[in-house]
Image (cartoon, rainbow, N blue to C red; front, side, top):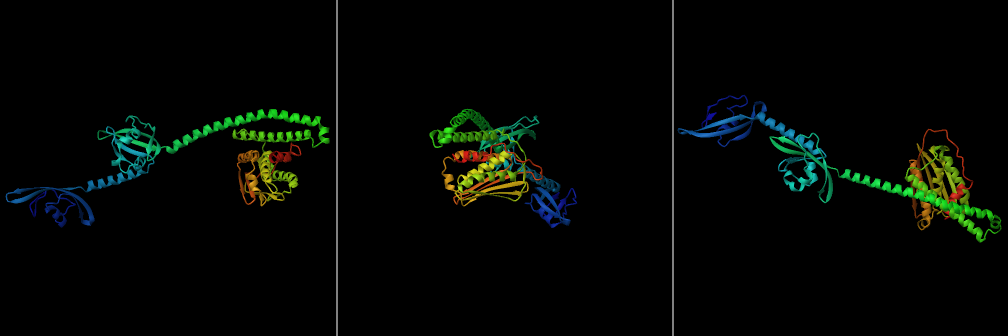
Amino acid sequence: MLTDENNIIYNNKKSENIDFRSKEINNALFNSNKNGEFKYIYEDDKEIFLNIDRASFRDINSKKNVIAIRDITEYKKLLQKLKISKEKYESLVNIIPEGIYIANFDTKNITYANSRFLEMTNYKTVEDIDIDNISKSMIITTSKDDENIKFQRRTVKSGQKDMHIECGGTIIEVNKKLNVVGIVRDITKQVNAELMEIEIEKQKTANKIKSEFFINMSHELKTPLNVISSSNQLMSILHKEDIKLNPDSQLSDAVKVTKKNADILMEIINNIMDLSKLELNVYENNKDYYNIVTLVEDTAIEFNDYVKLNDIEIFFDTDEEEKIGFVDPKDIEKIILTLLTMILRYSDKKSLVDISLTSKRSKSIISIKNTGGYDYNKYINDKDRRILDIAVSLAKNIIVIYNGKIDIKTDSDKNIEVTIELNLDNDIKNYKSRIRDDNDEFIYQKYLNMCNF
């Protein structure tokens, strides 16, 4: 349009969205300083965005203006949509756990980076990034014709710590310029887990070698031990009458001491072999369905006959007469026998040891405790208890193979409680009776081997 200082002289186009009679438009037209964009409210509160360009000239004695008015409403709406779209995509990219960046292919200057990339590189903004510090370690590219991004592992500094990363990128062309779109992943936890797995495998191999060594060594030790035991038995038979007539003689003492120590050593060797087999997962047992209540009670009753000699009494109680489990009865007896021995060895005279068996759904909970009569200091100061500790370690490992757990609580107030939890079947009703294939003094002999060293 063409205007003078106060009037529109010529307008080449009428607009449905512009009321040239309105005060707002007139102020814009005849204000020589009004240039660029401004917002204009049309009727019905409709927002219109306009852009004004003007050029002034003198015609004879008057000043005139050539004014171009463009309706840029649709353009502004498009920009707003693009802005919203950009914000959405940036929000999406910023929640991705990987670092994302865009860099110039030639200069390697980064033009965009998501928040995760900035966090990984310890920069606040893209402008702060020192490209020389990160280009060699993080900006990895493959051909733009390559469909798959090829990742490489790197170790970089993140603050004071080493960070393991996996990075890769591909080339894209935008406005005839090549750009690198890259991905950087923090794989520190994964690498640490891999290193841990390697270490575990090394440890497993070392443990396997150690366990195999102990098994082989135990077999080798058994041979001379059997020779010693056989020779001692032969001495007992050949000098049976002398030993009977002179029970306090040197010969009688020698036979007794030899037998006692041979039995203890055999017990230790057998326990070491069983521990090694458990570590190698080659431990054998003969499982079947048995009544756990009977197995625990019978062991306690047999024990009671011997510990009464020391004025110690074992009291057994159960809330069920039958609790069936798929077990090897020797394993259950070994567990109870070992843990009872651990308590009895350090119990005061005239004390009471309680054994209780309670049921909770598919679990059986066995509690063995001595309240007020346990000599904790004697336990702590016993240098020979390492022999018993081997047996206790074996008992704990056997409990684990039955998906059970054990808790041992001791204190200086003369109390000890051992709680064993075993997972057993609920609905089994038929079970076998325990038939002992050992001699009548099996429990007593085992007790002596662990307790009288």
